[in-house]
Length: 137
Image: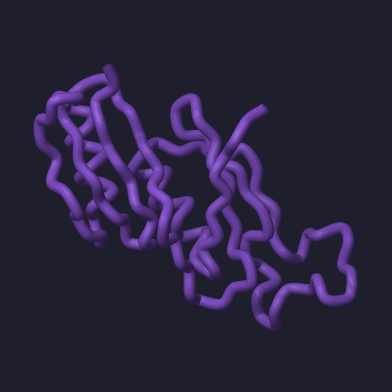
């Protein structure tokens, strides 16, 4: 059994993918656009103008996978109540990842030493996705 996050960026998925490629070194394993859906069933068609939006994507960040979509393309992504945790090898990597995720976002807890990590911080990126960055033990 495996649990993997599936994020709906509601119209900003491609922008988010490019951001995570730069910020965290994400690699795209798969990307399918709405227009490429082989089962265009009634009620499942993309909203008008959304044919080139991302229907499904899979990103690899280190040893983890995140899936992402543009969903219904409402323009209103809402990532309340969930935080992704990224564990890195050292303080320099933590600083780099934290700063990259904070670019255009909001710092909730600055990166600092804690009793459980030499570097730990919480940031919401420019899309509203909350991240905990820490040096793993």
